[in-house]
Image 1 (cartoon, rainbow, N blue to C red):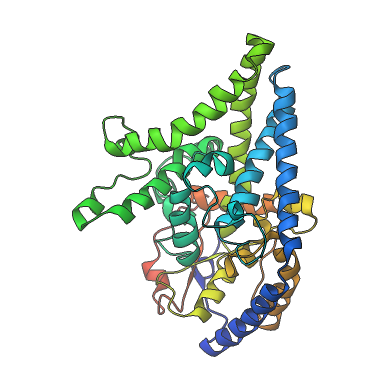
Image 2: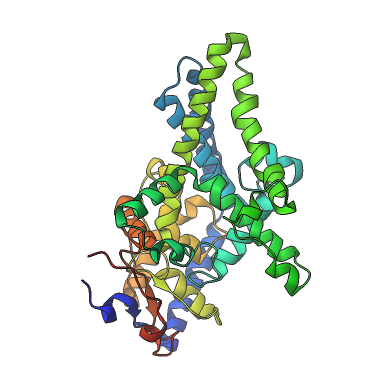
Length: 400
């Protein structure tokens, strides 16, 4: 078993002055990158968008023959591509600075109002995604206020008395349905917190997995069913299969079951590329909010992990989340710019003696799941805990 001192603490390798120098180099790089932006960056996005659309067309174009995993995978790939490679950068405003692009590819218009249907019809409502991901996750990374803090969210499982095999089983089942079961509810919870008018309303907001959040007898439950579940489910599992009615009932049934299979694939694929980005026994958590821009840049590096980067196809399959360090440094950046920035960011980290974590997505998945089940624990920045990290750290669940 790993010694507790080395397992749970992370001694900040940079002084305040060194963080300032790191931030200065990164700001210079960001400034140059913005100067390099051009219409070709938008054309690159359109190419990736077309790849996803082709996958969807091929998937549905063959789904009516017989329920099959090939068609399901293509439909799933189109779905993941729409979320990760189109909605994600556009919703951050990654293309807002490029002149001449259609307004629907800007943050102000994309998936707003009726445009949710053609732009990004998903279990997750766009307003909730903005508050949960663009605001809280990016600017409270690694804190308890970060809604994507994996270790904190799974304390109930990590601290349970369930045997390890059962914990792994729960994680596997959760991965198959995590978008509608957790992510959609989590984004609604964040929206409700923003709407709360007083402390009493704030205290009465149900947890994402609570009965009240799902019950048709509560306003929160009805909001979930009407805004998240029914719109997406009606489109994906009713309207689209119905389009194949001229080919007969067998075709409709085949499209329906292939769509169900595709949804499971979508959940598994998105779980694979999203969940491990900020988890592992080598990733840092923080107790206090960010106070300076220097600390912001530092935290995005020590609190994030990249996967292997490379070609457009490789990056598309990773949902461009293999550039997580670069993305967290500069959320509002086109996909194509991350490919150019990655080796430069890595060099800057090496220059300042800061570890740049980059590993296979499958190795990172194992590390993330080990965190989820309580087999390992994340690091706490000693400086943030003012030397009190070990006494304050919650008891970890270690497998023998």
